[in-house]
Length: 374
Image (cartoon, rainbow, N blue to C red; front, side, top):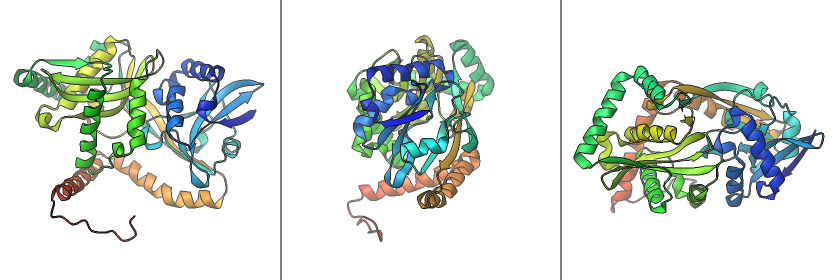
């Protein structure tokens, strides 16, 4: 077995075609975050992006995209931005994982959304988590019947708010796969506001993430594209979502809504309309990603599984990394696994967000310097 390292942009067309071939051959790899197009976009924007090309008997049998950070710390491609990563390979390929790390010049590789059960990484999985999906393989009506079975009360409430929104603000319509950059900017502004209100880090404060989103929005091919959907009430956009799509799977990424319409639950109304449009356009699945909001539990009609874990080589850097990361990962897993703890943490973050927003809007507030901050 031979392992060589390159930047994704250095791959020739035969290698890119092989990547697509391997991905299409395995249903567990049907995720746009595993696509060569996503790796190429990340490579354009980040210097630390690499891919290991695995060959057996002079034939490419796998690709392992990753990020190499200082001191040989390895992270999944896209890191905190993505909901799926792993080895794109022939079925059941098992690579000596420490040999893989050595070739990649990594001391440690920490993962939390890896395709569960891949033979190379399975021995190092510390936990496997469900990722709820909307499954349309039996048709939209079958999915809707499952949603009703999951929670008839929630469905009835959403339908009521949907009708009320239409009556009071104009007929509802969904714009599917909109190419309009102005609509994308509006969505990202809502999302930034949501991050700040809820005490999260605003991802779009980083210019490269905005540029990545714009690159993905402009991507159009049968196997990979960015999909922007926007829900309108009359002529006014009220909620939207931007995600990535393969030929059959749409992955949830950035949903947001205009808070002026919050009483109508426009985000959930949008998701219902988006599901109908996705099924109508021939998609089989919307992957909502693991953890997070309770709405996923009653919108789901199927489940995928992703794994958390860590693999390392015996080095001092790997030991220090373990000390710093493992307690945090365990705490996060405990919170995400318990709805009551998740709601409590969410309330704390929202409270912090309100305080921060108030301080930023008060011209008489003098920011305090934090010791050691830069």
